[in-house]
Length: 487
Image 1 (cartoon, rainbow, N blue to C red):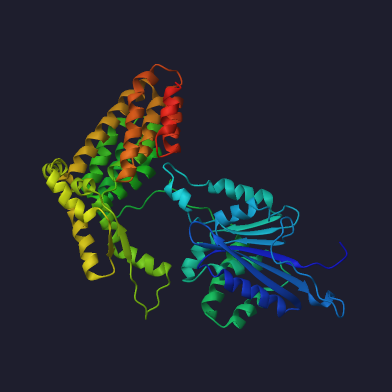
Image 2 (image 1 turned 60 degrees about the vertical axis):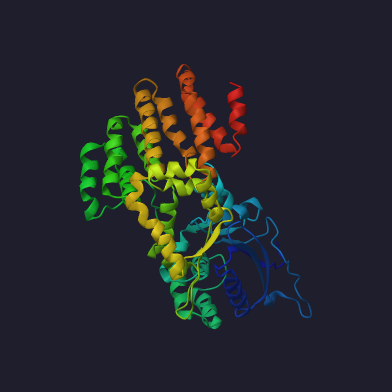
């Protein structure tokens, strides 16, 4: 092409990330350095928080004929983007889906962290989009990919991700401006200059260094002095392949209940210590089952100091501001009975008058303001029942179910290892509380009832995996029933 054209930049960002500020910096950067600039924005919804596409075109003023004006587009056109910036990995996926990234032309600046969408969070199974595949697609689709966890750098700088992404863009060399010209745009903005320049420098350095190796669930969890004995026991009694998972499990269960409960976890896994992959999977799923969700756990998590600190950080609470947190709670009578001593809980469920009385207070739900003294003390009182959890109705029921599940796994490991592995993985159906837990437990029971028939099939493990997938496909159980009927 011999005729001049605009430099085209699209930024996909979510609410609160400073996308508008970054767009303003780009406009100022262009106008201060001999370009005509135009910026537009199209707000949308990302099922996490508001998502906006900012679109900027920069046209070299020196190449505009006298008396003429360039015609600049109002929205990004697939195949016509020089730079695409995605503030999060799912936003990168949206850019790919729209065809905004092309291997002939586009520099793709991507933050690799994840903010999970509502559909990912509410899926009955693991509904997360595969981040590695998204990143692989981004690498294949772009002329150049600049990817790193820029959100971590923003958190360390104590601000939004926008200046970090601005620094990464400067380091990419995709725009005809120097680092000093980028920094001058931040200074002319006049707000939070020093903090933004610090974050800019972090993004610039990270983009030049390339992506750092990400830590994963397989990394060993650090165990403090109180858990040192359990850590030594893991090293002494279990194979190295399971150590990382076991350490995470011990941490989770000591936090959930106490040290003795974490010790019980290891006791239950000892019979499987020679079972290889079955042991590793059982270690993960047993930790999840033993830390089942109940009202005590929910209240405990909602009243922790770390939660208040996290929320204050997320909303960027200023020193002169007050923070109000409203918790929307709708416990059922069954959930109240679950945390009572077993005898009292069974009486509540059997007694019509008692159920109706408690139901009057739970029927319509309740809003509890945990940032107030009264609301905090209500949940704190429920959380303090943790010391009595072992005597509760739900605890006894869950321990019996766990014991029966592990017995099946141990029985099948020697003769049907593939089926045993899928029995372990079927635990993912049993999660949550209330209606979610009840539906999952019904599906789990249906699968366990199929074990005698599956043991006689050479592909029993594969068949159980398919049945579990059907159970997770919808919360009505109809997909599972159809598959069972077709067997």
